[in-house]
Length: 342
Image (cartoon, rainbow, N blue to C red; front, top):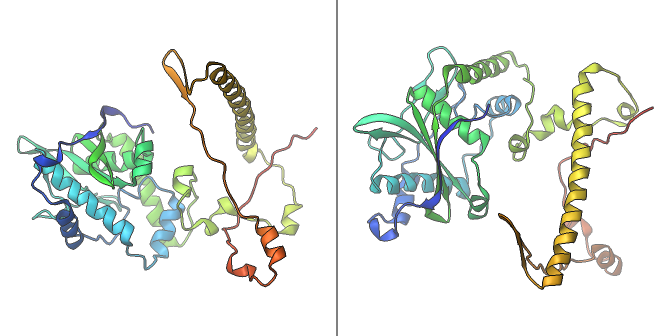
């Protein structure tokens, strides 16, 4: 599903700092005190609804004692402080963390789903849109061109649940509360939302039955997942299983897609090598660090060579060093190679 963006606004500052009497550090401090925590053990929340069913399953059935750390706590506090800034900038935002009436909860009468928007935006004293705020590090913030799919789903689904026509998504630079990017969306239609409501119903049924649902892997979903070792997508065959071959039409589409992806990757690599070599040649000829043609500009950025330690040589010359103290380990994984048979 591709979200319909009705209004997308570029990054920008809210107003100059002198327009605000609010003390940012004090606002962040108050946000720590006013944090609201919701027990999601018996329902699916909007922030989960676009996620992998298997991850949600394990989040519910094997909850950790993790209650947040300094980074997550500060992120929450920054989001609340931004809402205070938006309010002082003229937006009528109600029912947010720290608000006298706190956040609103919207529960579906027929599905195990409940949502808690970061705030409700009012226009002419009437509720108009839900507000979702995302606090991100400055490096990632600069890279954001379009919001993450999960953010869009969460925000639009919140609007559907709240029965409001619009959804406002704001990303804020955690290092500068006045540096923001925001997007306005239509609420999800009933048809779109039904897909996620049914998904939530199936996941909660799987939890009740103790049956693992299928994983729905993606780069966005899998990157930070803490349940990778339980996922079939990282299943690791033993020596005997490595020799076993099974022919099945179930894999036809996946194998063809993998072949196409490899060909595209190889083609892209060749194109990039050709383009870089030509641009460097032209840059050298003109002794210029910027090469422009039409609306495109190639900018040459000199980089210093990397300095690394030859650990093999170091340990060989100093056998007294305990290598185990310096070893790093990573989670096991599987590489998939593709070959064509006659």
